Length: 232
Image 1 (cartoon, helix red, strand yellow):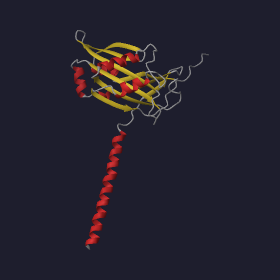
Image 2: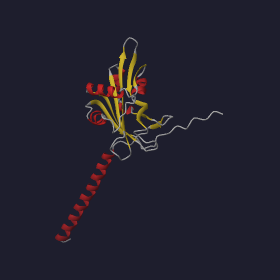
Image 3: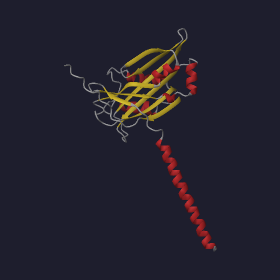
Image 4: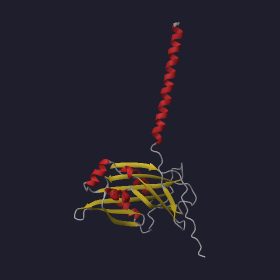
C-alpha cells in the first residue's frame, strides 16, 4: 500500500473510532439523564371530586444502615415533599408534604410514630421496623391537590423527594407548620402567596440528609370513584 493510501486508511479508521465513541458517549449521557424509571402510584379523587389523593411507596429510601439504626432504637425522621405536574411541564400545579418522626419508647418497648401531613398530626405505635415503614415509608391517601388546582380528568405526575434525617431542624419545622395550616389542605398552587417559598426552599434547598431519594410517578389520569348507587 502506498504511503498516501495508508495514511488515508489510518485517518478513516480514526474518524470511525471517534464517531463510535461519540455515539457511545451520547447514549451513556442519555441513560444518565433518564434517571430511575417512573414508579407506580395510585391517584384517586374523593367522592365529591374536590380533593385529590395519592398512595405511593418509597421504602427503598431505607437502606440497611437506616434499618439497623431503627432496630437499635435511634431517633429517625423521614420527610417526603412533592409537586404535582402535567407530564412534560416544569411548572407545578400543587404541592404536598409528609413528615414522620420515629422514637423508641424504652419502657413500653414500642416505636412511637408521629406523622404530620395535610390535615394535621397523628401519633401511633408500632412494634416492629416493618410496622414503622408501613407508616413512614409509604404515603397512603396523601392529599396532593384540589379541583381548583388540578382539573379533573387531566393526566398528572408526582415529582417527589424523600429525605431520611434532614440536617436542618428549622426546615423540618417549617414543613410541619406548612401542612398544618388553618386551611386544612396543606397544599399550595401557583396562586398561593407561599407557593414559591415551598417549591424553592422545601423541594430544592432542604439541606443534607443521611439518605436521599428522588422519584417521579408514571403519568396517569386519577381515578374518579363511581357515583353512589341510588336506593330502590
